[in-house]
Image 1: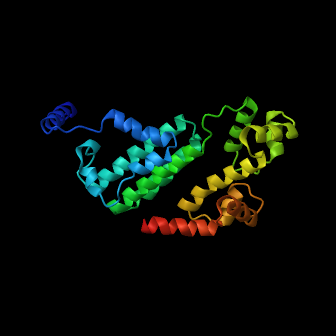
Image 2: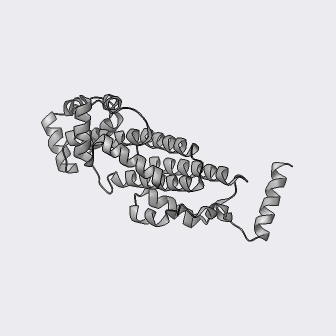
Image 3: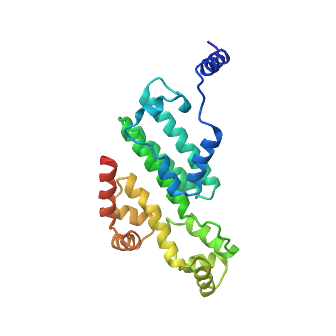
Length: 251
């Protein structure tokens, strides 16, 4: 059967059964809340992991006759759309696409519908929180914008305030004072925080040792990484990883 013939048959059957895909306004609001970092609204749309029947609804579209495969396809589509929208809204490209790859890889090994729905909820909240962390309605000077961009692009290197000031061609003291005045925190703490934020996903979705992660993100040593991580999160990397594994296993 040709694609056009099958398309017309499908359209006819959906019209006869009064079936339709999700309305554009509803779908737009769904993705817009995520891209805007609206945590409270996104929590409201999280699915009940026990409600696997929702994927049988006509508004989701049937991409496969096999229920698990259909869920996997929808997971990939949803993650891809959210990733691209978040990048357009300011999330760092490499961070967004790597996070997307990690979630899709994790989903690919799940064999229960409930686990796929739970992971999808985790993915939605993860992207939403990252978007919420982005500066909103804040107009920084060109110097601070460039400083932030430089740090985010070089978070795996052992960078210091001096490196940023030299790159921008600014006096170190001037840049430090300007950064605090515009953002509310020091440039050195911003560098540390960005490294820790990036390390979180490696702890969640990889088996790399703490020493490997410390080296990858340019910390002076494993102990320095642990110290900084606990200062930012209140947990050691080991405590965070154990807590994450537990929540993924029993969600």
